[in-house]
Image 1 (cartoon, rainbow, N blue to C red):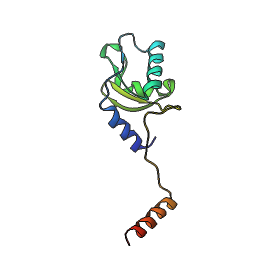
Image 2 (tube, rainbow, N blue to C red; image 1 turned 60 degrees about the horizontal axis):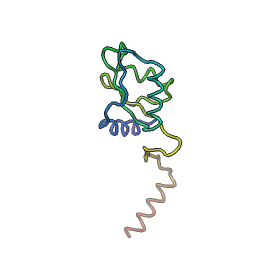
Image 3 (cartoon, rainbow, N blue to C red; image 1 turned 90 degrees about the vertical axis):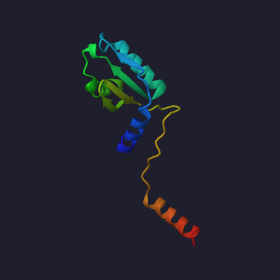
Image 4 (cartoon, one colour; image 1 turned 180 degrees about the vertical axis):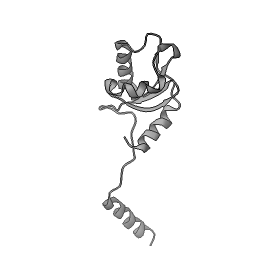
Length: 116
C-alpha cells in the first residue's frame, strides 16, 4: 500500500465511529470473527480498545494484521483503523496510478493540439 493510499484511507476513517469495542474480555475468537465479518461488509473500520481490556491500544492493529488479514491504516490512542479490500463489489476505489511514459506523451500531444 502506498503512502497516498494510506493517507486517503486515514481521511475516510476520520469521520467513522468505532464499530467494534474490545473490553475486559480481551481478544477472543468471537471478537476476531466479528472484526472479520464487519471488514467483509465495510472494508474500512475503526476499533476502540477500552482501558480495562489489558490490551495495548496502539499496538493492537499492528499485532493482529496477519490473523485478520487486514492492513492497519492508523493507530491513534486506543483506536485503530483497519482496511481490507473486497474482491467482489469493492466500496473504496483508489485512483492513484502511476502514469506511463506513453500516457504522459499522449496527454502532452493532446494539449499541444488543443492549444494551438
